[in-house]
Length: 433
Ligand SMILES: NC(=O)c1ccc[n+]([C@@H]2O[C@H](COP(=O)([O-])OP(=O)(O)OC[C@H]3O[C@@H](n4cnc5c(N)ncnc54)[C@H](O)[C@@H]3O)[C@@H](O)[C@H]2O)c1
Image (tube, rainbow, N blue to C red; front, side, top):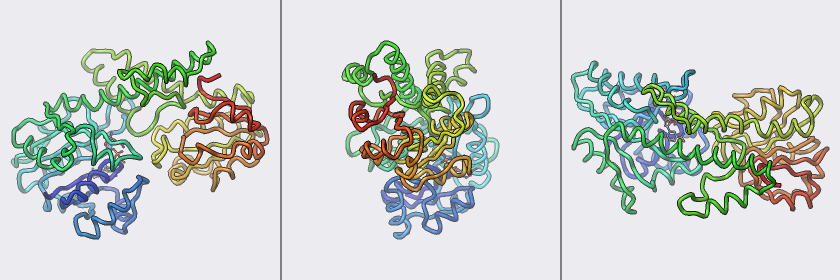
């Protein structure tokens, strides 16, 4: 099939590349000139494991191309995936300007009937609004499908090609048949394609993200209680999470969740409910707990060294919002860095993939180390913010020796307390004695 994908970010590029890998003929469109320029030159503008090899192969075999021109994309195909960003507006609602801009352009350029598949995460009622929006701008039939994406950055290709489920909000039998054909190759493992109305499909995505965020904030609150009562949150989460109704995944305390999805989607869900006169108490608290949690590591450093950190050099391991991505949108590391700088500290950070993004966001306000141990050398403390694999088994004795004062703040509970202490470190973590 011929497919056009509009928006070549963390989702759109993965959708485009994977669809091309499945044998479809794909055109990826983006308004960002720099991005398209990089892609045309064979460079992948984001870090996502495995994406560069798949992309290179599909381009080489002629199934994948890139353009800034949506009209070009539409000449190529009448199946359009819309995967532009839907960031938080200042009032917490989802900013849909990109979605409506693309929808209007599709309507203006359509020379034949089009199926517009909304992959972006959009609030309840958006598909209906998009339908009305395009209806005012063209006489061509534009079918609007809601098809929220559930992939995780860092495992995006596998998630897309081996989904737990595919959710499709459709309003016609034709749209349903098209989606079945489009996704048939991904359904051979028996995982379901779930058809429903547009509104339910839109709400599915927010419900899933808000629930996962709830698990994280919940265990973070329990970790705070563990600190007070002298319990070990590691034992508590294992004991509770072994119940299959609860599960171990997304049940780890840490420095708070970040990224391009949970924070904005939790806020947008609260905003949707507010518009209908409903206060979502649980979800509102999830966001509040998370905001506080993002300050936790900086609070711990300040509690240890005092409110004035002038003259202190603090090493950070990990800047990306989670391992295996270079995405720093709403990353907890940004809160930690800003607090430490505000208290007068010098911050020296190392991240395997996100340093270029950190430079864009933080400029020269911090130092960037070329290797993990180069950050630690001569620092007053080490703060582990993002649990990349390469930080999991360092030589802790060398870390202790390299530090001026051997203090380790483990924001992800990665290390065994007794081993850290045996290595000569003063070890502080989240919710463990
Ligand atoms: N990142 C994730 O892990 C993830 C997972 C599931 C769903 N989502 C959702 O998918 C959507 C996209 O997220 P993302 O992380 O890929 O965003 P992103 O910011 O990485 O990418 C969006 C892309 O759209 C392009 N764009 C914006 N307006 C455009 C326009 N008018 N015409 C053409 N291109 C335009 C931007 O230049 C950018 O390259 C969001 O709604 C997000 O919530 C994201």
